[in-house]
Image (cartoon, rainbow, N blue to C red; front, top):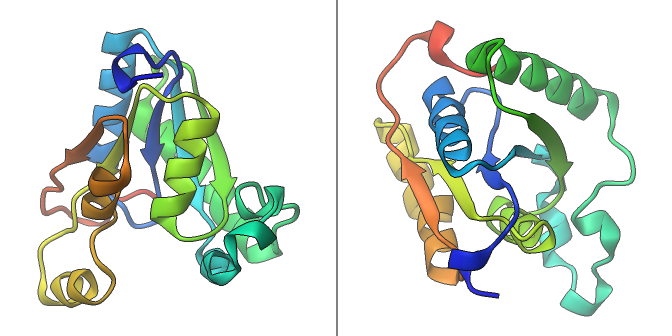
Length: 166
């Protein structure tokens, strides 16, 4: 199936500390396209699952079977923060917790749900983020090179703590 005919939701990568404009713009796109919004959080402690050989990965590498209490608390706080950012008139949305490298996890989810497109936030400005981008690469850049469906990158404005997802 080509990306233009994908029938699924708009998938947006979300994480604690991300600027709320990313999920707000993703919701606006979903609403304009008449799609549901699927927010995807990648559990921070699950990155090493991507080091397993491909034939050794199972359903748990996309859908963690269990979350530790820290990940559960983070997911609950993030869901509340996304709800606050979107407001009462938000389109239908859900939050899924994924495991693994964010690029691979988002790509696998997009394939599984036949996503129309994937939305991610750009790296914020600053020295620390620049070094992180050089060392690990941008999720947006790596997704755009590997995907057969559109990847939308939302620029992230400078903002205070009130503008960040929890």
